[in-house]
Length: 287
Image (cartoon, rainbow, N blue to C red; front, side, top):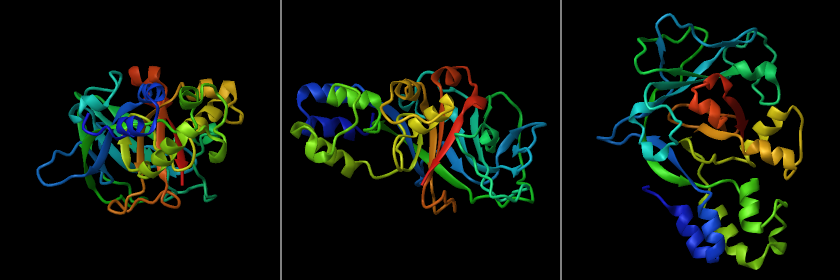
């Protein structure tokens, strides 16, 4: 682990018992950044994908073609930042309907709450022994600029609103109280955490870094088919069944802007990750 900022934060601002509970929730992740001289590229934003021979460009039927967002080379990712279920070879290709080719001409957008829109965000897994070809971007789309990314392993921390955090630090599943009513021994930690966790960036695995509130709750509500309030037991249980596959931030180098400098979040159930069922990935967008 090359970065342990969240462990240090707990050691500095929490009593020993709470620090131990907090650090038990941390997960390693891979943070992606623009390559520097001499670094190996493990992922790319934009450009043109390498698709399996005979594959067609992904589309959302009745709406239009999906734009190519990113590729991730699984075999060269640092394994210390990944779960054992993550593919050890091959490539993950991320596609998203950004409205460039809107055949429906109705401002269609992908929503985790509407199953009819799920085809607007797709993740393709190409095993390492699969013949591939560089696919030209269809004329209906303008490709995003090609940006190569290197990797670093870091700690990732769960959002404070998630049930496991509330249980660890508050001792029950209740909502966080107003800061003035928060137990005094937690206040320095909460302030320091909010100062530290300001970057979204691009990330593989670990805990998501949301723009506004836990992305797990958005996916969980969608999976349940109805909207439940934060802290509802059924929602908490469902939220714990989803993990982050990848998040891609807005990026000026790649000319990607998701809403008002937002981010794309792909989540998956651990059992689907283990069996490479990437057709079961769900996307939510926060901005």
